[in-house]
Image (tube, rainbow, N blue to C red; front, side, top):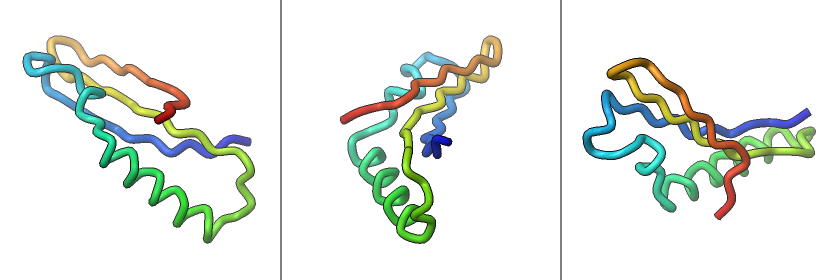
Length: 71
């Protein structure tokens, strides 16, 4: 019963930092704005959640999900 809005960031490796470090306040605001537009058209959702999915491709494929982010 929860609608998830997910920012997905991918990097080849962590030489220049982790993918989730690239999620800026500007990107979060854009995600919130997109969520508001979606919810205007689909008001049946009572619960929403914002998440970040971090993907690193090398040396081995890895995923890191940061759930329920707050500003």
